[in-house]
Image (cartoon, rainbow, N blue to C red; front, side, top):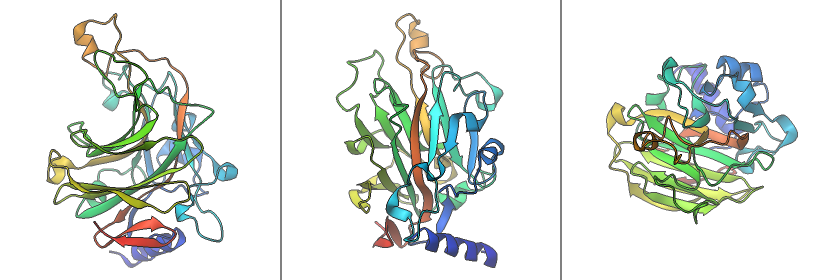
Length: 312
């Protein structure tokens, strides 16, 4: 590691009160601008969006909303929360290919000035902890009759090492809506088995750390609400359907990915193609993020306020 990089990393850790080395830091500094988001300058790659500029779908909130308090230094906040939204233009066309008309999606991908590929082996080896906090945007609420996938790591095969869901799980045919767990925030493993759920209460920060053991293929979950330090809610659990090595690694996404409802007017083949077909209302909806970073969890995991526990 270069000396300058080491100094920068230690300074970041001290300022934001974390334990182990921070491998990637997505806590938006106050000097980050909408122009930076549009040009992929800084810690985010912002290409997963509709046809408008990234700043159309995302807002840096400055001092208008306090971030999660877990990482704030005593002297004040160094981070500004980020609002990420979708509307009816939020149709992503990956690689210039067929537009994903079934989805509405805006996501940030962990990167360093647009470089996401070289970051993957840095943050996805040994034991690493993926930290993130999110809260509802009460002025632009989600439609909880739909499923939302809002935080995930996506290998090239389109699966998710883990994912955070909100709303009613997608089914074909459509079941009773909203589902019984629509108002819960749910964390699932690669096989989509439920690891943890909690009420997604408006007005509260929902704080997570997910420890990924990339060698032994396990997941452990830590969670807290608002100002409480993180605590272990799911001990290390097998995640054996995920692949080992590079095939099991992928980009770290957070944002809003809204799945459709099945359209009864579509053909059976179209109804089976959730990416390109289905019902979307086209409404503007958003979530707010804070405290997003990845730390080396070889020895310990940060709980907030300078507290730590040994890695799991």
